[in-house]
Length: 340
Image (cartoon, rainbow, N blue to C red; front, side):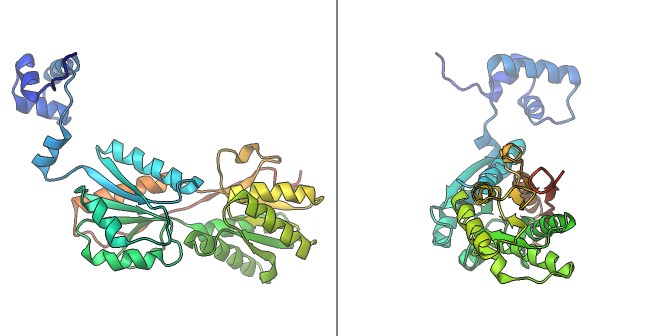
């Protein structure tokens, strides 16, 4: 087999045009006659020519690669964020350099950023969930950063460009739905409270109860860890403390699955005795028994928006005041919260 790389000069010679014309065709420039474009493209396809990204980088002064720092990719949300980033980057002609942190709470931010920058990336997407004090670690390293950075699902703050889901709104619409169904005693199973998203969803639950004249009773709150086993543990605790509880907002669908299992074991019919609303709308949610009412968040779109914002910063480096992209979640009503 011949593994020699076809050059742009060879394509130009075979097509009987200049290398500049081939370049214009490859880069989809409009200033090429349609018949010439078609002819050159046929030659490109026949010879198997692939444009050199390295050459493009040298000409334009960019690496056409983006650094991505992530963690917790075993969870539904973070993994889908990466999918959105990948889709948007490929569409824009960028490759990714991925760094997965083994621990999102303990890391050397300067070392992590230095490793990413050693690959000469054009910009960085920080897709690490905001957990505990890790936001302070990265903020301390920002003054030495030489490329633009966009934060995903991090608390918006001055001088930071972010793309986020409105988790508080998600908590509010979940709780409002349960109130609208006539539920009087609405409990809450949170995610780990050192996560910003978990605190925002709890805040939405609180605010909606207060907005409807309800009293917030702290004993109706149980803290989970996103895993189904914690949903089992938390719902058992809540129902033992408050057998009168007739609804619960569970801050992710995986915990809701565990909660539904134990609630049935404890003799509760869903939704007649206990209405349940989750958060995420994972692909399995419609197939729960009963199907799960949940708050859908498009985290893949959040990843795509993050790439869009980063490329905007690259094209206009003075645009440091770019506003955050805030995506609104939506309620998906199914059988677990509505009695027929």
